Length: 393
Image (cartoon, rainbow, N blue to C red; front, top):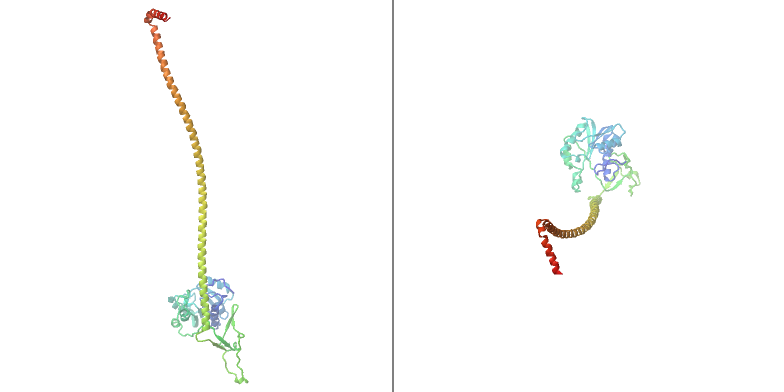
């Protein structure tokens, strides 16, 4: 069954395919023999599938993990058996009482802990184990996992060589029995009695969510040991026989292919990132073009408004100039008329002066004729006037 937890590439999730599935399921299948009827702690249980597998044979199984989301998932996914529990907590400060567990299982955990905290983790395991308790722990072999492959797992904080791990375990767990695990590519011969009672050889397979004994498959080739009598057959033949060349060429070929696939994946990711960057750049350019087009449209609208305003102003100016011209014509006519009026006024003023002079003369004549002198001279003037008429005749 698949999980709703995200697969980071480091924490195993049931449903994930590949070599990682074989490694993780095999460890828990191997550890079940030590959990039968015992109180078992699965330290750093992750998704919880391993704790549930141990609970199928244990008296009590507790999974502890630092990630609350993983714990909530495990409680929901594997809820049911009362002897199966999950709690949030750190492997360097377990939320457990002293000597409350018979077996502590911790697979691929210690390398995720800083070097300074690794002794604290092992001390916590020793604290919660009852007398006679057992620790089943796995850790990558730094020599083969990192050095030989030139691979550095970003999730691993401090990996260990074999002697380093042995010295780290020694204070609390001085008696140690070592096993090795590897994804091995080899030619395999197995007996048809493979699933017999010989407990020194075992094989497991995962069926849905359960680990079940593996049955010997039908081989591609047959190898038969035959004799005329039963006594001639070997008394004890190996149940499993493995063969590979000293240099592990097939394994190296597969690993080289895997590395090439990883390299190609990295190139594809780089290409995708480059495409993402180009797409982002194109979108940015498109946004700039759209912004420029909006600016152009707004500028054109402003120019249209300005042109319309200018045309309106030009028309107003033309109208004003026409009015000014008409005003100038009117002013010219007024000035011409004013000049004529002024000329007439001068003439009238001259005529008035003449009239004033004539009037003054008449007034003098009248005044003179009203005087006594005039009346005394009147007879002489009449005689003179008469004489002049005669002479003229």
